[in-house]
Every structure is written in C-alpha cells, then in structure tokens.
Length: 445
Image (tube, rainbow, N blue to C red; front, side, top):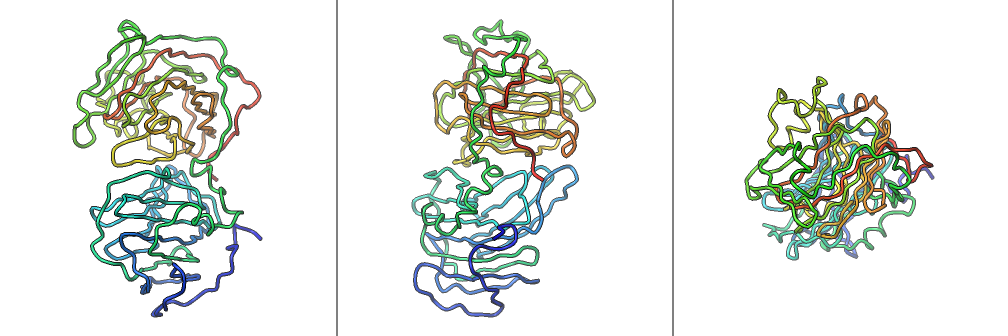
C-alpha cells in the first residue's frame, strides 16, 4: 500500500451536502471522506466548547515549497463559526498549517519550509480551555511541547456546525469530539506507516551527534569575551547593555518592556568569518524568557561589509536583518518567548527574504539555565548546528533554490528583548572534513 496515494484505512466518499448527521456511540462525530468543488456546512450532533478535538486527513496532491518564486497562497479547510479554523497558508518565506481561533482565544501555528507530496497527512488539534491547554499534532508528532500551559480562555457558545471547503484539497476521516485527547489517543488514529514520516519537516528527527573535536582544524581567532577590551571593536545595535563578571559577557536589553518590534538587540563581532568555518562558544541563559539567534555570513547585498556605515540603519528590529540591505543566514537555538510557548524547533533561515530553509530539534530547552556549548559549522553549502555534542540542524544549501551560497562575512549574537544571556570562550576554526558525523539532510523537493 502506498501512503502517497491511498489513505491506509477504509474510507468511503460520502456526499455530505445538505445531510444531517445522526448521533453516534462513543466520543466521535465522523465524516468518512469528502472532496468537492464548493464549501458545505454540516451540523454536529456533538457540540464543541470548553473541551474538544478536531482531527482529519489532508491530501496534498503535489509538493508545497517556499522560495523566491512562490506567491502568497492558501485557504481555510475547516471553519467552526465564531470558534476556530484550520488554514493551510503559504508565503515566499515559509508556510504551514494553523489552528486559528476567534478573538481572545489562542492560535497554534506551524511553520515549515514545505511539505513533500503527493501524500496524505493527519492533523489534530485538541484543547481544554479551562486548564489552558491547546495541543496540535501532525502524523502524531507534537507541534507544541507536551504539557505547555497557556492562558485559559472562555468559549462564548457551543459550536454545532462545521463549514468544509475542499475545493482545493481533499479531506478524509474528519472527526470531532467534545473531549480533550492525550497523545496516546491521537497516535491511535494514525497508522504506524505514517507516524514520524514528516519528522524532519517538523524538526523532530533525531540528527545524531556533532562532535566539534572531529571538525576543528587550525584556530583562526579566539575571544574569551571576559573583559570590555575583548569587544572593543564590536558593535551593538538596538538598546543593548553589556556587562562582564566572573569571565562571562552578559547581554541584555535596556527596554525589555517596549511595545511592538523595538527593544531587541544584535551584537556584531568586528572580525570576518571565512566562507568555511567552525564557530564555537559557551552560553548560559539567565531567566527563562527570550530567544537567541546567530547571524552569520552577513554582507551587504551589494557586497559592502555588513558594518559599513553607509548601509541602512539597523536598530535590532528583526526586519532590518531579514528584509533589509544585507544577506545572511540565521539560526535560532533557544526559543521561549511570551505568548508563544512550547515551540518544538530550532529554525534556520536565509536572508534577504526570511526563507525558512530547515527545522531541527530544540537546541536549549525552554527554562534551561545551564551552561551549553554551541558549535556552528559551515563548509561549502553545508550548515550544521550542534548543542552539547547533539546535532540540531543539518542542511545543505544547493545554491540554486534560494540563490547563491553565502560566503565570508560577519557574525552576530541576537537576543529578543526578554532575553538575558551570558557568553564566553568564542573560537573560530578552519573546519576539516571527517566522515559525516550526523545525518545529512537536503532541502525540500
């Protein structure tokens, strides 16, 4: 049986237009399968409210990818009036599936570089409004860290119908329940050949190890980051403060409570990194909230140095780096921002354009305040990120889909305004080429 063309459970196409579903035994209301040219609205004998679950199979008839030539696209698959929607959406930079709720209720987005196809995928959203729980799954893999607590919310009225739009995509096995499910219940609805099938796309694949000792060649430069003189030539963008104590460089924003996009900081090293390098440093997150990023291979889009004063002013606002007049890669390795709890991935993006090119497992877990060793490797188009010897990113830039591979340029440490973090023992080495130390991955088809 091919999972690319056939749903591995018996389904029968049911014309549900104008039908009235009858109550069933057990917790589920089910619609076996549907594909049509116009939206239909179906009544639900079991209403949704403070607790509930929505799950279904979605068929993608072809690969969905991002990239410079991609136009904004998407649509609503399922809509529960005044309650929630399941949307598939796509931009040039990234796309995915999102559970979008009514005002004052939480959303649950999924951002990915693309989905392979043709194939079926299973999605599930399950919640308990009173306890502050909203979880999502693709093929049984969590897209929010299990146990993540969010602010409780109120539902205004029971939801008794669903609007189904399959004018562009096929939906099968649609089920709704008035109960919240745990992961075991969700997995029971996903046949074994599908479980984990999209884990690399979702950033959940085990990528093995990345031992920097295996890659470290001649040292190009080192910086202890322990005294003010160590960063005499560095440049801070945004309202950042730098302090030193006990051999660490501490960075923080002076305006952590600023509204909007302001308040974030970017600290640039004054030395160029070559096109191929192994960058290492130690980091310790102080507190729990924040997001940490490394910008690298940064250069003006016209070839000027990234710190050239004639480039447009940058003040820590993210768009200045992802959509401004520099090119660079950036990778996140810690993410625990207010209102966006439970992220399950490290992300690698290519700029100008904010292209999400790869997802990987969590680098530093939310709330972890221990000391961690970060190793970022670039060799040709291969980019790998290791945290404490664990590979959390492994991607190859083919120099075609997202434009040419970036070469020598500046690197910087970015923190969102809520972050306080300490750094020490930065080292840049020439990489050597041992036997591959982790599973090599390439971009989406």
